[in-house]
Length: 212
Image (cartoon, rainbow, N blue to C red; front, side, top):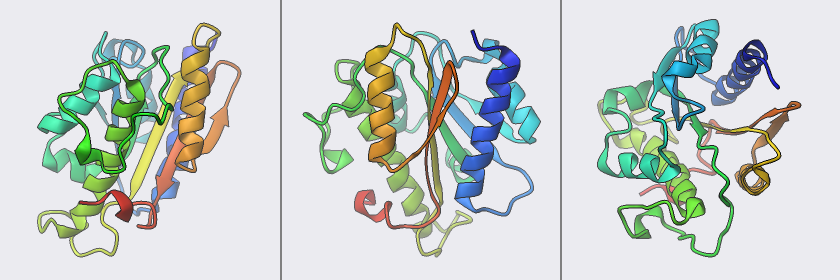
């Protein structure tokens, strides 16, 4: 079983890669975490990893919640404040449930076409909404006069980290989240029992398609 020290070390390394991919020059970085029991604040690994990075942690993980909760919070604007959003450098998703997050059968090209609010019946739909919505929100910061990214060519850089706790009891989730990462042209990082996937871009080639 992976130790807390190894978990923190790997998380720190992965976030360093994500921050490097964002290509920003800042003194302090901010990392947002959304998830369930593995990620909630009492576990401490996220906060300790951020401390090692000298980064500001925003932990919105709640035990027993699903990716549908994250999607609905984005929908109603409660996952983060506008000020927090402008400062977030990396968005970490850790919804480790034995569900297929890659199935494309019910996906929409435009995230605004999904029926809302979301429920947990289709994790792939919820993941698709969260990723596309975040990319679109980042791009649209170029139009926000209160944003540091106002009038920039492609808005706010996007760095999304998809996490899982690798375990034999989650073959559906772990297989599909890897495919999801590959779909978004991610880097696949692996260790014996903890695997992390990164989607990161500092330009607009992948952003414009989902921008409103």
